[in-house]
Length: 165
Image (cartoon, rainbow, N blue to C red; front, side, top):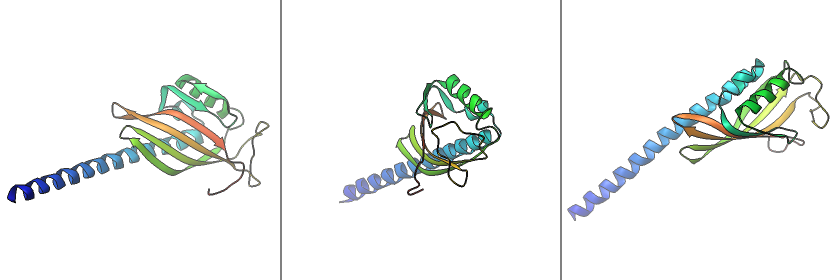
């Protein structure tokens, strides 16, 4: 009887410890990911393509609101450099995290609503609201390597009709 109680106590203790450790790790990782989102916003708002690309992985993939696909850090940075000097020049961006889901301890899917204001003339095919705001849904997949989170996939979709914004 005593051995059964000891075994049950040990099982509960180990399980609670594992849950607390995982929860603390997840919380720290969520804070780190939210910081990356804040850094993206600050970099966008200052028109700094290098800073905006800081967390983009060397082999990451990027799909923009036109459906154009770019692969690699350099292409991501170059494209943002181009847009920051043309139709997004002087614009401001707000990002609201809808959800962060940890697929594993080292992989997170981040679903973000974005709003861009202060746009210059946008190319054809992009819908800017009556309020002059461009709204997008941004899905980023981040992978943690050597203690640092990297954006491996960045998929941006223009919101044509607001639903559960």
